[in-house]
Image (tube, rainbow, N blue to C red; front, top):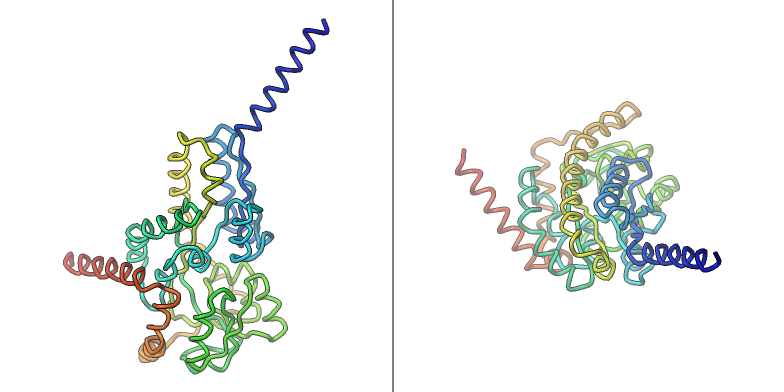
Length: 336
């Protein structure tokens, strides 16, 4: 009888060990607040990957900046303290050269242009990131960015009078804002609300959905209706983690992520519009820009644009994106 029990125990232990060998928990960091549209879709992705892998690939999500801001998440991935992250092109730009070029100011103008650029340009960045130890499993649209301020913003001069929050991981952009006569205050995203409350900052550049979700609009209650640039985001996984996933299920996992990415794009457009209407109900005022002010915004940006191309956008990446954009506009024009 003892031999039978011993044999059963060995079988149980072998089963447990086999489950450990063929299971993988992926710790994924995200700045998206818990319960937000982004967070819900990340959870849906986790469920799909679990189903596809028959329970062998588990995504554990750390939302709302629990794992730190984007530079911190990337650093933790390099140290293998984190395996994946949902980040914007600002974070992507710290890995590959040039993803931020897709978010160049007043460059891409429409949803259609953006969809075309994401399809054509992202393979270029995927290759660069893989060489640096990261796998991109999704690119998506995370909203058009607008200026929000403590005081109304109609023109560049209105913005100069306010302390503007900028990402603390973009030193060249900070330098360019200063040269242009603005007062940029570099901070991590999780610190922005506190800085607005204390008066350290007055204005920010963000999507409506983010501004509503983080409650920044409670203080920065004036929205400039200038569609400044698209915010692009995605999910990256460390290459070492990705290679632990059985090769035969990777294509299906990628297909699942791409499908979720398309849904995020659509959900973002709907949620941004809803966020603006909800914020209006709680005191948000939209500053409609006179047509002649668009030229002033554009001229201010162009004066310092070349510096950004070299430092943050990457000349090769920017020219590649520009080429695809011109191609799209040419084809669109010929079809009219």
